[in-house]
Amino acid sequence: MILTTTPTIEGRAILEYRGFVFGEVISDVNYYEALGENNGMLMVTASGTAVKLV
Image (cartoon, rainbow, N blue to C red; front, side, top):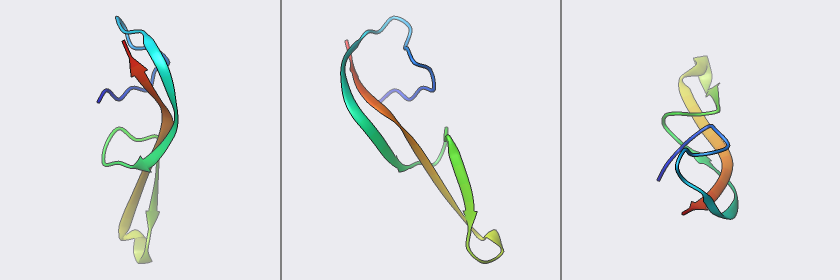
């Protein structure tokens, strides 16, 4: 799996767009939010478009 925040990947072509994806991740995130009493928990989410590369 390749994760990127750019619209292209150098040297690779997009063969197919697979649709919107959303999930919880640990690193390289777009958004985070502190939750719980005294901000004791951390929820991390990311979203983007899944693609199939050549």
